[in-house]
Image (cartoon, rainbow, N blue to C red; front, side, top):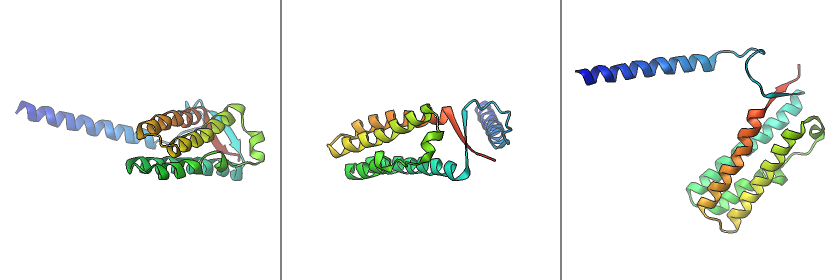
Length: 152
């Protein structure tokens, strides 16, 4: 009987935590939130350009993971090349972005090229996973440092 009460208590606590987290996550953020990331305020078209490039990188990450799951290094290479230096957009936008953001961007595109090279050269799954883990540090660092917002 006691084990049943403990189990019920755990479920109730779990539901309370989930409801609280969902409520917090869904709460609207005000401009005075605690978000300390640097705001990159850009016109809609330039903001969309950056976001499209990020979605392309995310698609490459998905393709790399599918390739790794199938142990298909040709798929890993193709997916990585899409977001390598050839996939980097070049525009007047570069002049508006801070040096730190541009550094993350360059390192990330070069990281995709490096990963593609390792896959083509016969790197093992472990080699690729290690490279992928290092590459995603750029994503985490950039998203932690910058916030792209549309100019009003």
